[in-house]
Length: 89
Image 1 (cartoon, one colour):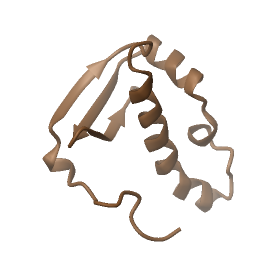
Image 2: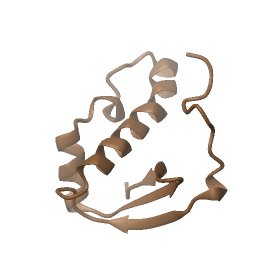
Image 3: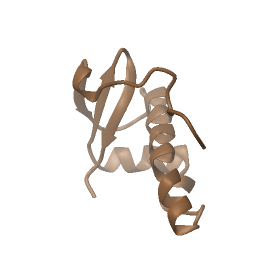
Image 4: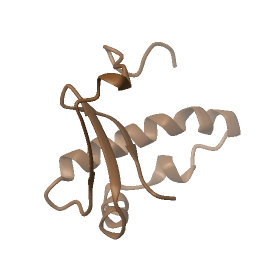
C-alpha cells in the first residue's frame, strides 16, 4: 500500500469538534466511520505481525456498537470528517 489514506491529508490541529458520546443507535453512520478508521490504523500492525486477524481488523459494526453502549468514546472531526477516535482500554 502506498500513498496517503485520505486524498487530502488533515492536520489534526485543525479539528473542529471533539466530543464524547455513548451508544450508537442514532449515530450508526458515525460508528461505521470509526470502524473504518480503526481498521485502517491496524493494517500496519497486521503486516508487521503477519496476522490479518487482529481484533481491530475483524471487529464488526455490531460489536463496536455494543462496545460503545458500555463505554464512552471520544470523536474528533475536521471538515465534517472523523479524523480520530479513542475509547478507554
